[in-house]
Length: 85
Image 1 (cartoon, rainbow, N blue to C red):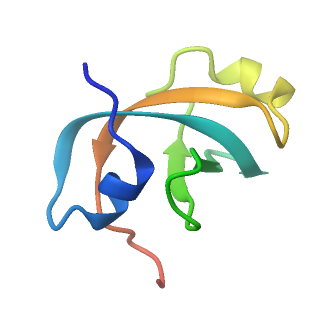
Image 2 (cartoon, helix red, strand yellow):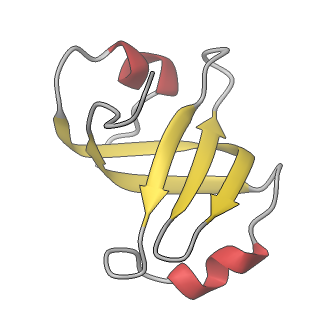
């Protein structure tokens, strides 16, 4: 799978089923059944939000170790946010 720059992903007008992004963790928020990671690769001032769940993410239990500044590679589907903004 070819890497997509976060700038290009944020400008995408439609859903993308196969996407690979790489960058650095800006923030991580853990909840009971899922986690949010804000990722940035330096191509945009905006971050891309990654939603991860234990059911769909290999190595979910290792996320506890991830902190701000860690480098990360994520693949999956690009969808519009279901929340505000």
